[in-house]
Length: 115
Length: 114
Image 1: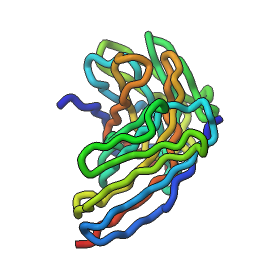
Image 2: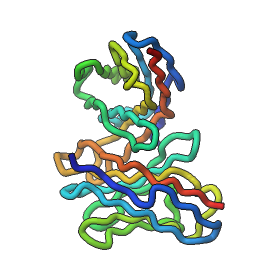
Image 3: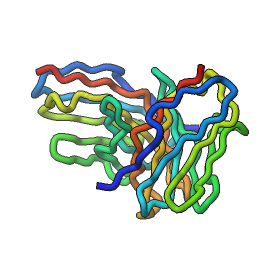
Image 4: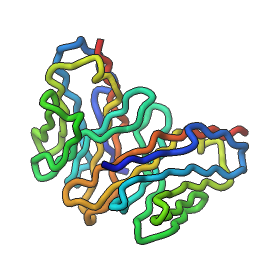
């Protein structure tokens, strides 16, 4: 069964450093998402991406964040200058094109630790 | 924006008993309500979902009910088994072209005791 994959599974970085989290969505999917979950808190929406542009973003997704689909398979989340509060589990999700309502499939997540 | 509340935060049941998790939402425009199961070290996996034009949906031991008037929906697991132990999340979403962001509840940690 096709699945969303994410790399790395765990990323440790120093405050102020740039990180890139990588995702490979399911191959025929068209809509891509990033969510994050700070330890002990809810899973929060960050951004959705469709047709090579951001379709919606949350208040969390400020100028320090960017997303890119550099080729036909990868979908990346970049944090330019990490802060301690960026420490969280980051989930990538993708969905197909069976109408506007369709299942979002989640990857296993990348645990980001900012020291 | 949408706010989803989920109760209880933890639930311990005896194997074979039923488990019920309840969620409320605030935005009457929400019309899609998925439930996800998250096992240790894995991402959320969809187990069942319901659209707002349906009041109830069942898939083997899992059922979901939706009350649009009261803005709440529930997950029912019957004949629980140890492999049902996991964290369960409810979510709500609104039909929107190229969007459909999910707003999640806080999660329920379910422990099924053998």
